Amino acid sequence: MFSDEELRKVSILFRAFGNPIRFKIVALVSETKRPLHIKAVARLLKRDYAAIYRHVKVLEKSGLLGIYEVGRSRVLYPKDEELINLFLSFAKKLAQKNI
Image 1 (cartoon, one colour):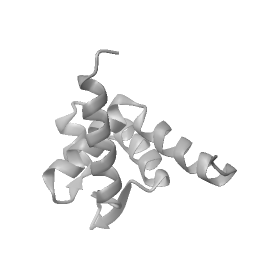
Image 2 (spheres, rainbow, N blue to C red; image 1 turned 90 degrees about the vertical axis):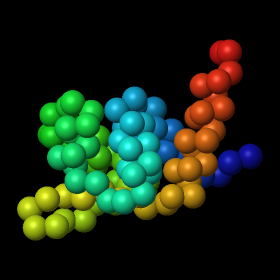
Image 3 (cartoon, rainbow, N blue to C red; image 1 turned 135 degrees about the vertical axis):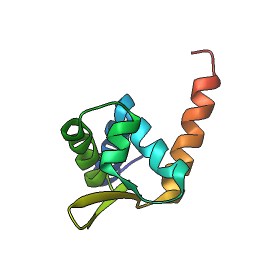
Image 4 (spheres, rainbow, N blue to C red; image 1 turned 180 degrees about the vertical axis):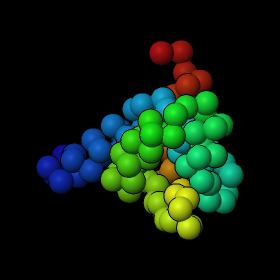
């Protein structure tokens, strides 16, 4: 059985990954193997910077991504690459199932 704290943490992660845009952001950041500017992510996903930034804040609070500033730019990096890779691998297997 899960403790209440464990359930809370897992729920936060599933909620973060539960949005297609956030899922794409995490996948992009993990695939590049280098930090990405939020502006670049917005451009790649053809979305407004402000909308992407709101999604990024959810991902930051979940502990999946980190943000640091370079001048006036905000740059994303994976905070827990092992967890991200595990989640992406699990998602790939789920996508291949006939559900």
